[in-house]
Length: 131
Ligand SMILES: [Zn+2]
Ligand SMILES: [Zn+2]
Image (cartoon, rainbow, N blue to C red; front, side):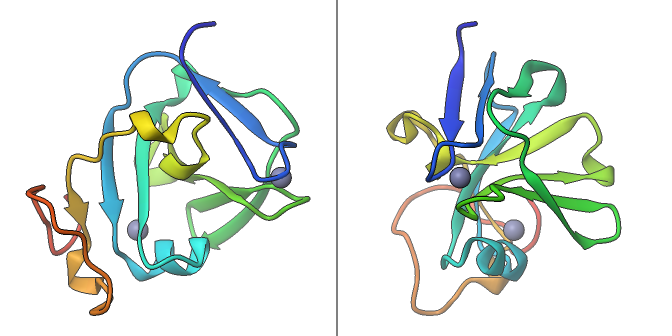
């Protein structure tokens, strides 16, 4: 399988996918912030048909109706986001990629919730809510 791969901190949960990311963005929303314990997260979408977990199955936290946040049951690393409203795709965190340096974010979303003490100086489009 040629494509991209990633893993959690301890290496129990691993994944791979083929093809290009559907989209890639920085998210400044409070849910992502609390889930990742970081001021902002960089994440991207992949079609479920092109994706698979290759190590241990992640644990699931249902953060709200129709939303599933997947994480490593051993080390706690957030691994993925799935939601009924995004059926057929899975969202992954750029920092979990084996080669995150190749990631290219295309925008900022939910900038209305951005922390005042954190910003990135770039020319990417910014959206107050979802992009
Ligand atoms: Zn782990
Ligand atoms: Zn978010």
